[in-house]
Length: 605
Image (cartoon, rainbow, N blue to C red; front, side, top):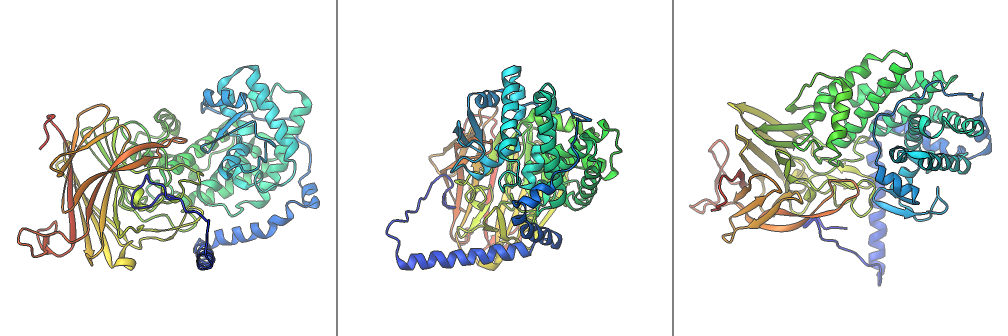
């Protein structure tokens, strides 16, 4: 696991020679973590707790023969509607599958055996395999070989998984599989023989019957939307399944009221999850149109309100900002989603309910996490990155967060730490306490943000109390972006006891080259294209350290970070320990000021 002190350095602990004392410590820590997980579970909304409890209570019954027989019912004879899947796949990934290489969740298994339950396969890899989202990649390859391969793999799954198993029949995975099988039906099944189509329809109906019984099944947020999409797809596409369409839409309307915030943001506060939910809602709307069913007003409103937030969360290269488990994604795919959303091209700069702010001037874009972390039950991808920000100039990303590799065990703890974000770290401690299974045990109770705009200049005054209980400190961050976009300034102030070391981290995109001036008072930043930028700071010591960039799925890239270290309160010229606050009043609070300015010449000071 990487230390929080320097993202990019792996620390590996060896179990050899473990003492009795260390064994006791391990057991005690296990009990503490178990108690913490249970406490976090109980802090989830009551309906989630009840749903998860009943699902766990009934789950042992799913594998019994009587339950399996109960899934049989009237046989479907045909697909009434084969929905159009507009999303392009990756032909290169499809070619790998044809060659027997299954590359999912950052892991590649060649000719795994047994295919659907390979021993030692990571959970994320197994989930992606059983979701069948990769059928789109085989379709991108095209031709009879890809079609036969898709058909053979679906047939193999039906033969090996005709009864409940925890990995294959998880509600979210099951829902995704149903959506993908129906979305690719014309590609792999429409021209198949009658026997195959009968087995496929029978399998889909049995799985949908199970899904209808168990939902919400302990799911929440984006995962529940994905599961509902599968149930709605079967209800709309297969004759005799209309009751599942009604149930799915009723649950969806209930969830939209909970999950879509007043400004259009998704409750999980993750750009990637926001994108995934919006895409699913767009597909459900298209399916209802194609089947001649009315679109619920809540669904149309959710799509209309989510599109402007998606624009807010994009950088100049068209990709997403890296907050709370997100990847860049691809700009053209985001363009497709926004185009299909059909909303007026409204844009937002201020999303107070979602907790994101966008500062934009000239060619510069600053995106800021200025909100409370998501609440328990919706914090599956939450990071401890409060008051972190990213900066891009045109299509070039300059200052970033580290990003995330979903389901990759080597990065789960590191990527969520405060040190993996462009914000302040106090006492080598996270601003939110990280819990297992991508949850947060304790988060800032108060996160404040005030925005001011004057003649094209923008200020943000923000604060959070995530360090109050541990250190008695409130972190204040003030950002200013000039009307030209060439000057970004920041001020980080720590109200309270100043006896604890403070580190500001500014992670740089891998395409940015950084060099520390011989004087040690500034750093020159050179993006791959465009003008250079200069970073200066006062109130701390400047250095460059190694970092890591996880912003693209399946890629781990080395990069650098600017580090500003201050382990004592700033001193003014008189040496009395007083600094000035933003309003000019004297303060004993530790304070660091910094600036990032576009260079007009190659000469540095």
